[in-house]
Length: 83
Image (tube, rainbow, N blue to C red; front, side, top):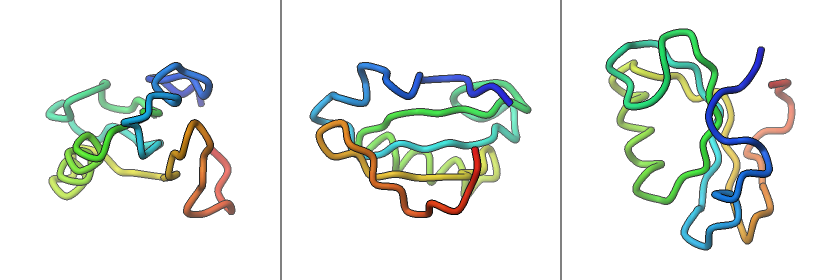
């Protein structure tokens, strides 16, 4: 499945304010990004990540994978998932 959103080497990844990378499925047309059925990758600031968690709690999205971003380097929470 093709990921929508940010490319893995997107400039957003290297923004000093970016702290999170998530891969998620869009479950509702009420999600703030994407269309139902899209699988998305986004690089997010802390506030953006908190909004994503709120969207997940409302069942608008389902986060499949998360990585912390430190100076452009990804630190995955789990490495046992193929995405």
